[in-house]
Amino acid sequence: MTEPIRLHFEVDGENFASAGAASEAVKMRLKQIGVDPAVVRKVSIAMYEGEINMVIHAKGGRADVAIWPTHVELVLSDDGPGIADIDLAMQEGYSTAPDAIRSLGFGAGMGLPNMKKYSDEMKLESEVGKGTTVTMRINL
Amino acid sequence: MLGDKEFHTVRLDSDRCKGCINCMKRCPTEAIRVRNGKATILYDRCIGCGECIRACAHQAKRAVYDPFDLIHDYEYKVALPAPSLYGQFHNLDDINVVLEGLLKLGFDMVYEVAQGAELISDFTRKYMAGNPKKPVISSACPAVVELILIRFHRLKENLLPVIAPVDVAAKLAREKAVRESGLPPEKIGVFFISPCPAKVFALHRGLGADANLVDGVLAESEVYFRLLDAMKSVKNPRPLAQCGIVGIGWASSGGESAGVLRDNYLAADGVENCISVLEEIEDEKIQDVDFVELNACPGGCVGGVLNIENPFVAKARIQALRKYMPVSKNNLKEVPHEKDFYLWNNDPEIMPVFKLDQNMFVALQKMQKVEELLAGLPRLDCGACGAPSCRAFAEDVVNGLVPESACERREKKG
Ligand SMILES: Nc1ncnc2c1ncn2[C@@H]1O[C@H](COP(=O)(O)OP(=O)(O)O)[C@@H](O)[C@H]1O
Ligand code: SF4
Ligand code: SF4
Ligand SMILES: [Mg+2]
Image 1 (tube, rainbow over the protein chains, first blue to last red):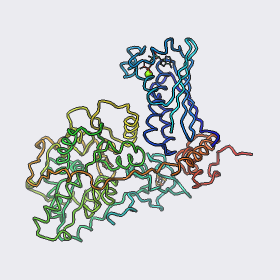
Image 2: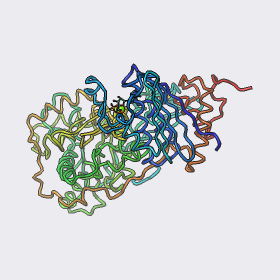
Image 3: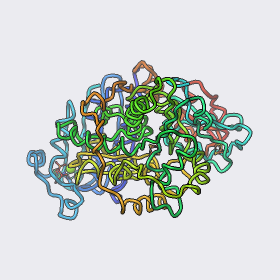
Image 4: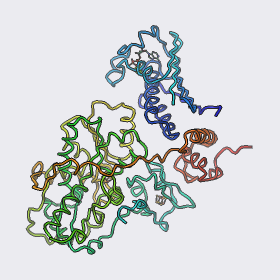
């Protein structure tokens, strides 16, 4: 296979209820391909955290997924406010989420650390005022 | 027929089927296709939830169960009524009237499934204390267990590996019948009165427990009409009932949980709600919950398709019946304490029915083709091709089950 399966999702920043729809769709496909459930779990958690971040911090964005025979590549990009201090953002428990979001159970500051934990490679690129792109690779 | 792997829960009455696609659109596992104007069931995907029976306005989808007259093949007949049965009767204020009615129908002994349920509640409390993988997911609804086995493979290890209340009741009832009748076991017929086809299926095939625990499974709806008559002549019922509030509580959603834990539980009912809860557990979005009770039917077993009464009316009636009952009646002398009595001895297997291919590389290539095909489909999910969604249609085409031309609305190439 020289070309992977490519999937594209627009992640709606206005709609909390639909956050997670893209990771759900990816999970369904990985199950149908017969990917090891433990790996499916890593992909869904990592992707869901990325989706939620775009919804709560960047008013939405895009998710591009490529499924290769050897790995899954997830690219989550947005045109939101960007992250000024990436090292700080990567720390467990660090969050700038407002109280209203926390009361919904989000904003524990574990999203980026979990994305790092559940992926085999992760790259976080961000420019203040321009947006953020997270690229993750998870081996099958 | 018992123990038959080919046993099916739902059957199509072809003459009645109009090919309207209502059932196909409602099936939660996309197990129905309409071919040549008639519905067909992909049985490997069927979980026995009864949604298609609810959806069909033409009574073309039929639940499969055993005929009532089967009881006459046995010298000593035992009835195992499900707790939901008690909610079917108008103006009933005493469960004993139902139990006496069953005896008048020709049964020699009645053993309430609610009794089995109370024993399982006790056992589950002990099991929970042993620090199992959380959340523990109830295995009482066979449609939910089947759903996990076909679609949520990783959650199988969260299932409570305990046999169903009817299995417990069947084992204890048979022992008691042998003792009381002095007859050899083969002369004793044990019959479950079921609220749903899922339980018919589970008992016939064996799900967790052995397949031969009962001799037949009767439909609540069929027994109901016979019972109505029989109950009219019951004047002074004897105190036969052997269960309490905990046991009959299992008839509706939340009842099982209430018998296990005070809090930290979640109870959901209706198959679509069960699916969304399972998705959330799988994604580890549900935390701080120790026990999850899922019932495929709306309202719980009172909502099973073999009931007569509206599930909410039945639930209200059962609540009213509880007023005169003790909390639980587990003072049985024959109460078994060893855990092997309760634990699964027939471990159910995962069934990867949604996999596009057993070989992952081939499955990937098929998925590639599905996505390509899908890009050329109108995404109307109109059902005119006989598949429940454009995606399901594309999968069927890739699996060689239907030609691409079955979709009239696709973009035709070249
Ligand atoms: N896509 C994004 N756009 C802008 N800021 C982000 C984005 N993702 C994360 N951040 C910043 O990084 C912080 C830490 O993110 P995370 O670890 O996911 O925790 P949480 O989302 O719970 O706040 C966020 O509070 C936010 O300030
Ligand atoms: S609902 Fe299904 S079984 Fe009933 S008539 Fe329509 S297609 Fe046939
Ligand atoms: S909820 Fe109860 S009645 Fe409905 S399918 Fe499950 S076990 Fe059967
Ligand atoms: Mg986050």
